[in-house]
Length: 392
Ligand SMILES: Nc1ncnc2c1ncn2[C@@H]1O[C@H](COP(=O)(O)OS(=O)(=O)O)[C@@H](OP(=O)(O)O)[C@H]1O
Ligand SMILES: [Mg+2]
Ligand SMILES: [Mg+2]
Ligand SMILES: [Mg+2]
Image (spheres, rainbow, N blue to C red):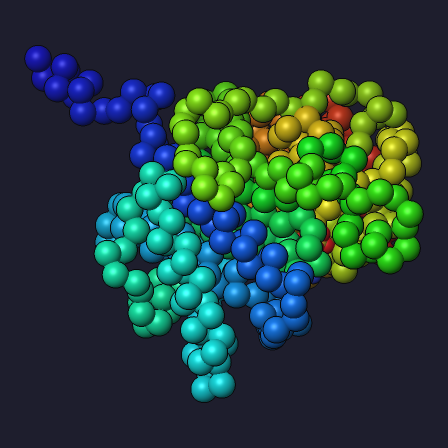
């Protein structure tokens, strides 16, 4: 009798995190809609919506607005006492005396997005949020993570550089419990219909190439991919477009990593910017392990999505010495690739450690994500062989 009660109160494996999955996927869908609207405005006019952070990296209305929106939705769904979030942005810039206009724009963007909540199956606020509530939602995401308990990690706009260039970017939300990523959701609003277009850089091609640009229909396909740890599957839904209502689970389909394990047929992805990862080191590794195709340079965690969907086989990132990778740049992508059948480790073959706070402490050399163990073994050996002679 006692055992029966225990069974009833413990969710079965397949029900575990079901509310978290639903809320997180819906919140990321909403965040993607918000980003599409802001990106559209950014491209059509330059009106000071791109700011520079202290490290000179860009931040936009979308970064703050998504952080506020997702934070508010998670608190509303689970109760603010139960929600702890580690996220990229803070409110310093928004609180400056000359930032009233910027804050008003963020506030309007958040309210415009939250007003659409019912279309996504979530509840919005009864009355619009005031600026102080918006600031509170952003600054509440100040958890520092760690080895115990439960927290969310959010990169409101990953690949902000790609975002402001009208290119690839992602919204990344993950749930971490006792140091392990248990749920990952990646929104990729510009994921194109054809994988070749992943490396189609709008601004660049508009200026120097005669290539026919993808039509907006085939470019803005967009998807949300998500996975629960231990489920053995990663799922994808199309992005919800204006006037559509979220139909779930009809629109969901599983994704799987590529079965290619021959290096000469494999494609590797890497960051667009040399400053974020050494292109010369990865070229050496690629050559020595027999990769023959041109690298696919893509902004943001869309690289993780490309591996999970089987559109590329390898992702490598080797940041400069001293740069510490942050958990929100990887958590969602890692669990999604693993559940889609792939392997993700540091460049020595060790698992990434999400239990040490906001950084991936102890990460050795770089990050390697692969469609399968054969390619993974080959890369680890190739990195090992060329590491000492590199200047990294
Ligand atoms: N110096 C340095 N080295 C390595 N990584 C850095 C560095 N500076 C920043 N970042 C982080 O990289 C995130 C963007 O990574 P990407 O893979 O999208 O790079 S790239 O834009 O394609 O070059 C980017 O994420 P967002 O800020 O969310 O865009 C940063 O967290
Ligand atoms: Mg990022
Ligand atoms: Mg970001
Ligand atoms: Mg940033």
